[in-house]
Image (tube, rainbow, N blue to C red; front, side, top):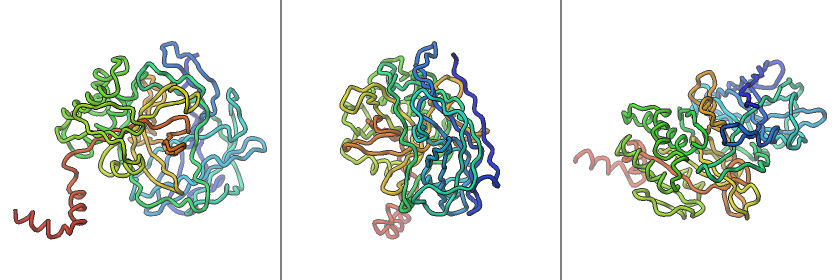
Length: 415
């Protein structure tokens, strides 16, 4: 059976749900899905139908200057799970215009088990000016249908492929009235989409980053994200069977062709990488601190290894995504990212009516001193960042100001 790519958009009426009544922040074009997992082969072998991986897609228009919090409650018979807990919707000062977002939904919260379709259910949502300590009591719900999502078995190298078990996602669960988002969030605007082919997450992740750097810093490279992806696929695609170190090194060489000012750095989170020619490596800095530092001026790719049979067992797969934002909330860290989970050479990572955004949001958790991504069997293995050297002038000026920069600037002017 060929996978279906159909989505049914659930249009919400302001009279039916609690939404923008608190301010200018609003959401719309809401849809839900339940993932089927397919193998990486050409026959579209179905590995698991009706998994516990659900997803909610929606448009967001932020308030003029304030953070609002999205809480979503589902209803299936007598079960009313708190599906999305205190997801911050950032203001126009952080993300301008309309942003397309996707968040994981744990369908186990409905009481489902693997192999059971969610089908039709109901939901309601609330937007509040402060986080909630418990699920909101909502007066009415609207019907929705979970349509089919098609996810591909995950592999970073095309050889070690995660074919299950698939478990369930962590979702967005920043429960507690103390879950106010911490100031200092960074979300990159306009990171482009890429349509990936099967097993090509690394060329796709690198291409988004390089294209964003090119447009953000006006480097003048004439190729867009999709053409950069095609070039990188020819050099470092999974079918080349190159080790990670050589793929990163070749990406660095390609980046230098985009602009000699692009510098690549690596954080070896789990100490799995060997030396990479021309690329400095760090294996001691904490991942969250590294992400917060790098994201200010640089785009980042994050690779993770899947331990489907347990964290003490052999890896069962891997994947790499493009990180587009970082924020902290209630003692937790959350990431915005882009990723083509279908990898069918057609759909690409999500867009909404041509909206250049289309970001996903997930928790970056920690277990046994190791960081995980989307659930606790996906352990972060390494991260790669690209920056333009020298960095933008206002960052240089900020650094100078921290050293008594006014005097320094006067000296620079005299020179």
